[in-house]
Length: 274
Image (cartoon, rainbow, N blue to C red):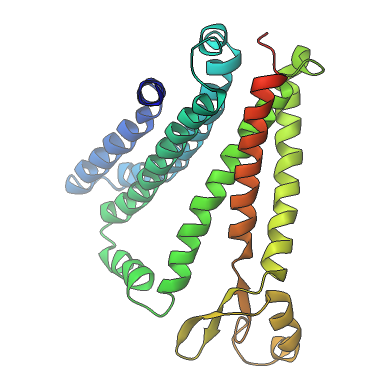
């Protein structure tokens, strides 16, 4: 049943999200043709619109995440979906996987759009510098951590969205469920953000900048900052000797799991279909 639910949710995204991908491809082709015909105004416009289209792709994926969950469980499809012979956890999991995949695809599309803009203006040197920095320098471990951290944070954000929407569709809030969904999301997002900062500062695991590159360190970020206070006013690099805490990843993972489990419990015991 999960496979059928997932196929349906992914298909729903396929009717919405790829619009931005088509726009990116069209703008890239227009930019290439304009460069070939030496029309600088159109080249500049295509590059600018590619930048915006990349952002729009990610934004559209976020809109899909919100709309698909609300519509599938509490909107027009809610009565049918919630009476299916399947556990609430599988309903949430199906929407989580589809939202996660479409957001990842859209993030890749955004990167491709921005790279395409550089190709149009023929700035291959900058592309090479970016690739060398990301995958061929001492900062590569930090880049990998940033990618992993972003992936885990996306999981937490989806959990925040799902929990906020689910809570807003319980009996005390259902008459103004859209308003309360927005309010609950921002409150939860702020709370998780504070938890991220605390975990980043206090969990004794991090990445430290050294003369030879970036290494793992088993110390708290707060402790390393206090030990290196004198370096902040010196000529040393700003992050020299400071451990960048990775505890925020654990906080995001815990928050995402907790919020999704809470959303599942509310779906089972407390929610109503308007």
